[in-house]
Amino acid sequence: MFSTKERLLLGTLAGAKFTHIMDFMIMMPLAPQLMRIFGIDAQQFGILVSSYTFSAGIIGFLGAFVIDRFDRKKALLFAYVGFVVGTFLCGLANSYGQLMLARIFTGMFGGVLNALVLSIIGDSFQLKKRASAMGVVMAAFSAAAALGVPFGIYVAATWSWNYPFLILGAMSLVVLFGILFVVPPLSQHLDHIKPKTAPWTVVTRIAQNPNQLRALALKMFLVLGQFMIIPFIAPYMVGNIGFSELELTYIYLLGGFLTLFTGPIIGRWADRYGHKRTFMVFASLSILPILMITHLPSWGMLFALLSTSLFFILISGRIIPAITMEISSVHPEYRAGFMSISSALQQMSAGLAALIGGSIVIETASKTILQFNYIGYIAVALTLLSMYMARRVRAVEEKK
Image 1 (tube, one colour):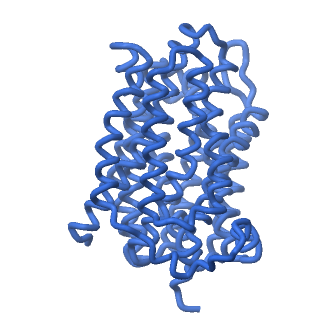
Image 2 (tube, helix red, strand yellow):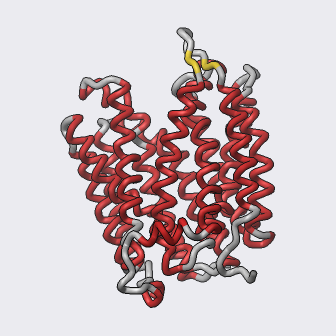
Image 3 (cartoon, one colour):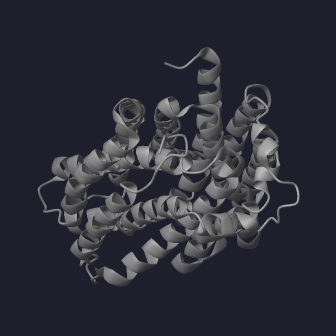
């Protein structure tokens, strides 16, 4: 389906996506070591994690004002070099303050990196191939989710907490060379940019375009629903189902590896049968594992793993066509700015979702999680809202 040149481009973009997500995922298992070595508590560790998210969200939003004024390849190179430098700085940090600054620095470049990868897919692949390309890149996300936690646990336990970042930095250098030699110059969108247009018009342009607003709402509803559940899967499995902390890795390994294979397949289905139709099918099906996870009985590890695996497969299955629809809702000359706004909203929505979820669930003295079922009902309602929005989102390449 893809030419050799397209495969090389997809492999490079998937590598950028993989290392970007790995950088975020490997922080999670480092909590015990970092708290012990730096003498910090859980709240301070939470601030350390969120510093990256807020930095990415703020810079992603500000970057939206100017990002469409540059060649996509040059912008991606700049962002990825900053990301690689930030990753090495994380590995070389010797104090809590230094690591905090390094995470903020890395987040500054990670905030636009994701938007650029998605924009390049939108610019380089026709509508009929776009979801298939998205499926390949999202498979890299799944691989990072599957490998990030066990990789961080193993490397940190074998050497120290610094080494996961240093190894990831070395891996990222390979991707950097791929960007330099594989990604072609992408400046066609510049032909349509009006040089005297004020940078902030990117926001007014979106605000005046109902189709783009619906695409952003679609993404926001999906992210809110997912991230109200995901942060509480681990404590629920430990406190209510009886998983050990080590056994939690089975959830991410199995779910990640399954979506690694199902993602590209779902992408091809979306291109063959329609992005909107595929989204509707998988959004409808995702309601089942949402309710299963948030109402999970103590029926053993196998049933719990079945529930979480279905959750990851179907959540991935709905996000692939949804992001394809989002990318396709805006003209190429404004795509990177739009996706930067979208990435910033995604970061903020994920943070808001975690706050909402944390205000609903109750942890008892015995570590049991209560009221998780309420989050399930809210996530189902948000899924239905996303389906309503999806019906009204139109690709700009489509005939009216």
